[in-house]
Amino acid sequence: MAVTVETNGVPGPPTGINVIVVGAGFGGLTAAIECHRQGHHVEIYESFPELKILGDIISFGSNAGRIFYRWSDGKVAAKMRAVSIDLSNYGFKIHKYDTGEVVADQKTPQMDPTAPVFNGHRGELHEIVFEYARDELGIPIHLGKRVVQYFEGEGKAGIELESGEKIIADLVVGSDGVRSKARTLVLGYEDKPKSSGYAVWRAWFPNTDMKADPRTAQFCENGDTFNGWIGPDVHFLFSTIKNGSDCCWVLTHRDEHDIEESWSFPGKLEEVYKVLEGWDPMCKAIVEKTPSLVDWKLVYRDPLPTWVSKEGRICLLGDSAHPFLPTSAQGATQALEDGVTLAICLKNAGKQNIPAAVRTYQEIRYDRVKAVQKTGETTRDMWHKTDWDKAKKDPKAIELPREDWIMGHDAQKHAEAVFGETVKKFL
Ligand SMILES: Cc1cc2nc3c(=O)[nH]c(=O)nc-3n(C[C@H](O)[C@H](O)[C@H](O)COP(=O)(O)OP(=O)(O)OC[C@H]3O[C@@H](n4cnc5c(N)ncnc54)[C@H](O)[C@@H]3O)c2cc1C
Image 1 (cartoon, rainbow, N blue to C red):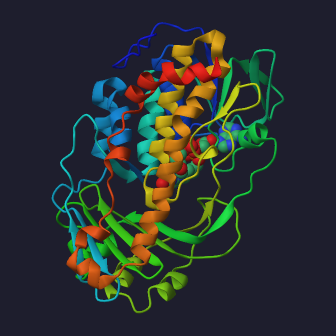
Image 2 (tube, protein in one colour):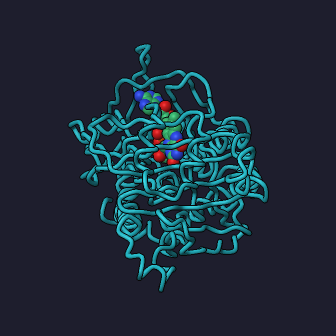
Image 3 (tube, rainbow, N blue to C red):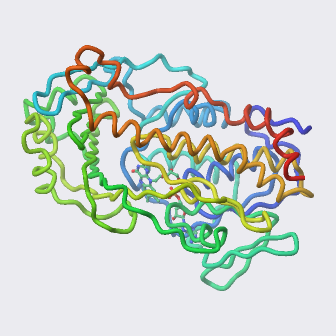
């Protein structure tokens, strides 16, 4: 069986496999970087015309850190750590929503330098990964290229761009996000999202007004902080990042509105204040400092029946295959694990066996992804239905779960270990 490259910089021996990746989010970039590491030729097609610092907070667990750490011998991970929250002193303080008392003071586990965790601005972290792929590895990233059509047949697959241009490869990876077009081709129908019954208001802003208010200055003066207030059907998470200079909050609440999934709907502060009535006044003191906020409806999708097209030449990866609720804190990380797994399956199966490689990728990933997705609901429900008498006696019961089967996973080693047995089903 082929041996996987351990460190990066130099790609593995060329496999002759040509891959088109659609979408330059974390999923697409990682798939491309990992394909490059494994010796495949890869090019990315992305609809946005230029890279912009978009979004707000995003989380990567140590199962992502293990992947990033292998890129450029830890240099990419080091850059990402420099803009990520550092909670080694502060930990995570969980407050009862109305009295504000701290019921659980969760310590931050010591970080494994070879599997670091990252919580930071999505746009800043994305820029580091994007530049690594484009500038250091030289992966062609074609911007301003919207894919309007996917096709496959005769041992090839391809995409058609808005301009009418067609590009052909051995495999097309549809990492085109929650509103994926590739998904429609793979499934043969449009998979509509369902409302999850919840929405999140989210905001990211500089600390100037926070520091000017004696009630809130404490969060910005001694390094980074992370606090959560949890109450019936609502939770409010607030963090300060980059030595307390940036502030970020997210508030998850009931919302039945039927609306398309997007990151960019503007939210209204008055609506946030209404939800916070009767809550610890500190929450409003923080929210008042917010210049603008996003109202993000949390949609839900049942697990897709398949991530792989009929002929096994087009596959889904990341959010296009499996959107996550933010309470799992694993959406982006699972997209990364997908990319690592796919690249290894392709390398080990070889150019003659692309459909078997792609089906093996799905087989290795499917059940794990489904199980991790579920944790988004269990954590949310645990917080929203807290029994406070019990929580005061056993604060650990409301701590943010950090489960070893999720965080301790090494996608690269796992794919190598199970590939041989799994691929037999598809050859
Ligand atoms: C603008 C933006 C802001 C976000 N902000 C946050 C955030 O603050 N916090 C958070 O936790 N998560 C955020 N996310 C989502 C998060 O990045 C993903 O859930 C996770 O990283 C998995 O990434 P993905 O690559 O599967 O999907 P995405 O990150 O959604 O990437 C998909 C990419 O595909 C491109 N694309 C879509 N359709 C086409 C097409 N037809 N042709 C070519 N390209 C196409 C999109 O432009 C996008 O760059 C954001 C996503 C986006 C796109």
